[in-house]
Length: 428
Image 1 (spheres, one colour):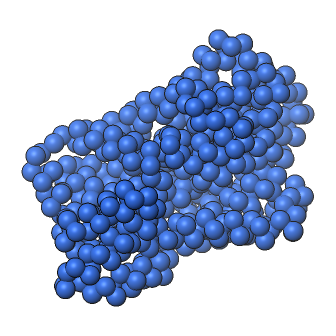
Image 2 (image 1 turned 90 degrees about the horizontal axis):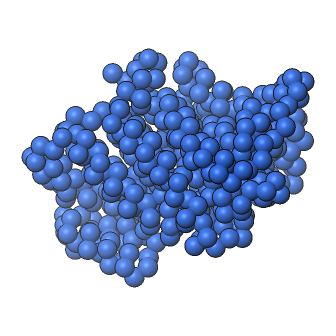
Image 3 (image 1 turned 120 degrees about the vertical axis):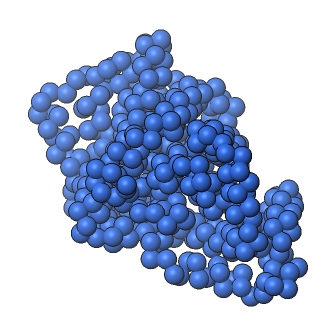
């Protein structure tokens, strides 16, 4: 049964079918060839998966909140605050780019929203100040990787749902890794800025700093409300996402006079479109995974690997390598949905904590946002700057190396991931 499923899936991929549709066709093919499976189960699993999970409702709500914030003047005030904090150093706007992605990642949870919102402001501004366009674009694309790691992370929500883990634990686990990746990407900025003698921004006066901080506070309250409400138990992740949407609808128009009412239909439509794509993937992957699980394939894989008794660190290295390869042609959500049902039992068997394993999966899959040929953030950066892909590959390499080195540090030091969840009582 598993053989039929996988063969049909691979054939569909080879003929150019989208990954989610290929999974649905594979599941339906297996159901039609084996009498033990009724084909009507496939659409039943598809619909049931999407309607039975209250947790999954948080994903489209976080997407909507991020899109509203991105077009509500939030990106502009966060850039002003970041400039006041780190703009005075050599290559100041490059550090602003890194820090602003960390700020905005705590609002949107989406790498694509990060590039779209910040790149529109920062790339032209950096080019005007004398930065190379390929450097500015590559940096903007790379720093967006922080967004799906720092809470609220849409990928972390998907993993928590797949692994039956606490979303609050996954959110807490992402704080230190997100900070470390931001610091890691500042290292190549330091050397490149000095080598190319990029400019400094004038240091702000104390009144200017307080103005920037005051203007940014309403925007910074969005992640504070989300994480604070979840951590103190005021509301669930889904309720936190709904509160974030209401806050994003009310506060930015009051403080920043954006977005205009006429823009809201387009924002809702864009958010619905992206949510629909994710929902389609989740539904079809759920049907695919159900057939795979029915065939006992994940259990057999886990048993086989566990029988080899690999060291936990060998398993982690193999997972990272697998995710880096898959990231060249799959989106992070697709990677998580396809691999976690098979790999999580193995992780448990070799003694890897599920929260630590989940954060390694989230970070490794997020790298796929910036790797050719299908990195979504890479294409958004190309659209903003007008540069072709071949002009961005080389400038991306220092930042990609920084992300991978930080990922290995996080992978081999579980305490970096588990410290906050344990302190807050979300993990053992």
